[in-house]
Length: 365
Image 1 (cartoon, one colour):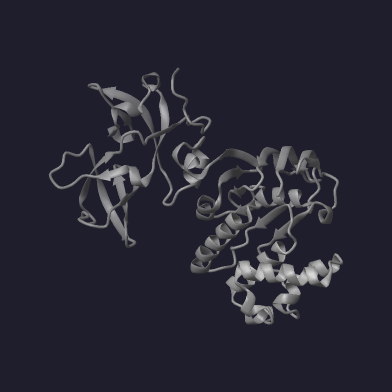
Image 2 (cartoon, one colour):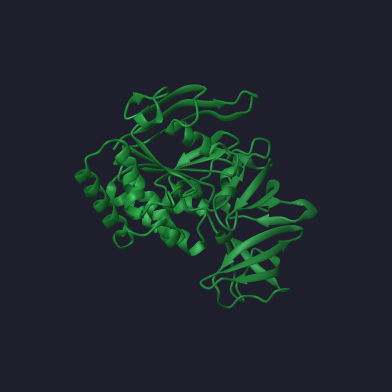
């Protein structure tokens, strides 16, 4: 396997549009690195630059330590899996798997051995004589993965490979890709717009917006300590609640002073004293709005507009004055819609951002 290192990589189109603005990171040997962001953020363009399908405007791209800016795609020792399966409909599964190897002049015995190994890894043995029209979407995607696998490349590039599958198949194929990565120990760079895919698959995640990298870290580090408002609200479902107000301490009790004269009480240890008096954007994950039991003292009350039970949990849509909130509750003993739910904020789980820049507030000292 190999490393993939990007040093201030840029992509600028002739009309002046900057698709990628100085991307720098390294996918380590054997790492599954995910590029995630909304449509148009530059993630697929960046992957195509790594593949050699898009010219690099500036910066350096290294695969296994070798600068490959001007190296042809076929000579980069990479294999790419696209959103469309791109299988040849007139060929069997075995012929589709063998096609690229045949073009490269691989010996027949080696081709057969590679197909056998890929079929065993991806459980395609019973499908080898079928044509793509006779396969399900998940089976076609496994064949597309197998076609990359038989290449035995240094780096696998996957561009939204699960987008055409239904929800159940996406979940099973996520498991398949994670298992494949573990068994191969392969370097993989995976592009998706789906934050669930990113969080469940990535050993590290590169979050992108408008051609710029917002943050790079492990999934849970991004979730627990987002660098800015975009990362905070993009990762997590339901999305993080955001409230704008002024941090105050009334009677020694800290809170966020909102419009309408409301104050949202906050745990004492959450606020840095140097922040008092300043306007902030407060972020609260839905699971960190805690429902108080009947008779338990609540820090504040919010009107419950609607409940969405989803089995093991329920999403509660609340209103604190004119400010909407979403909470994630256990499914039992829930208040009725139209009632006032007694709530408190979980200690140590408040996120504070600068409204002017969107960046996370640094603690004093």
